[in-house]
Image (tube, rainbow, N blue to C red; front, side, top):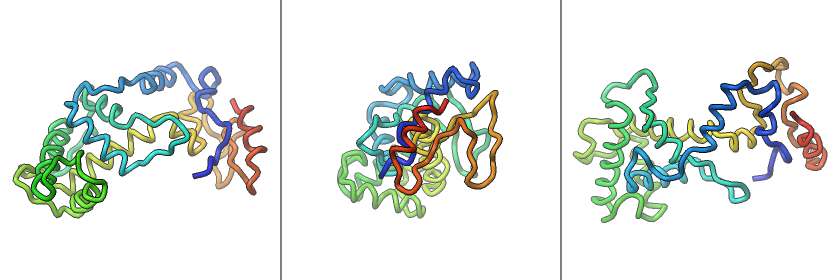
Length: 213
């Protein structure tokens, strides 16, 4: 996929009016998240990584966003959504039970844990989970479809888009506090926002993005 915002680095806004101290502190924590599991077991952590690779595959031209470590940190800190769907346990238990059940389904269907299956077999089980078409007793009453929607998709996608590397991909400047966004209309941008490639002119966008602050 071509870079839509060449030369743009949201971290260049660190000492500008775009970010206050609280923003800097939160982003520093995300950048420094440990790459090894602290809540999950190694087995669970690897499974989350496999799920993330299918849901948010990452390009080779830049460092990967640490999706599994970000999900692991969320659970370690026991940060809740503030609500639960019917039939769902709390988030920590939901993830642990869901991974156990997914492994049980994988063992039954293909003779191995989910993380060790071929990609096609993993995708087949993920599609069945999305439809709610998994029935192993290891689910213990937790609806597979709800686990897929409320935990797997939500936590993995939120983790991905919470990271500054992902912000660079869409030209987002972050919370912009105290500066704030002013030009909110369609196809409008504040002068300190990233410039998207127009008419294939990558060099022009890159020059402008090196000056964005």
